[in-house]
Length: 220
Image (cartoon, rainbow, N blue to C red; front, side, top):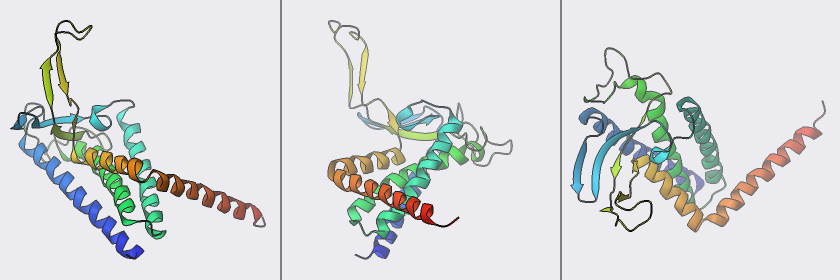
């Protein structure tokens, strides 16, 4: 397969996953109230929540720095994806990078635009482009999450130290399709292509050093 075909394949993956991710999020946002749930099975729910932080509800830094950090990461992955396509890497490797890139873009769309495009969902179904404006400013939107898999939901025995008698749920985090594509892409890269990833990053460093040496040799 030529680099051009691999490139178009990566673009197709990104567009398809981004459309699916945003379609699901917009449907959830415009049809469900915050913390409303739909039971699919005893271990799978569509549970609407909004995440101001990172994947799986993790909060480490403020919203604006996080959004800007995400944008920087996406720019890096866009450049990296371009390089691995240009260098004609295996399409399966390129597809993994495309998965991560599409997931990052999906969550950035929420962070950048949703605060302006929608009003809040607390106690109501949100409106798209509300007359009174959105619930936040640009770059301060919350990421829509909806997949909840309580595979194990039990009360722990009293004899267990510290946690005895408490409710134990696995898997507790609520996530979205974009989070899933990032995790799948990263998992496959580290399990199946760890050597290729390391080699490609080393190659990037070597090219940067060569470029610096060339610039240093140029006459002032």
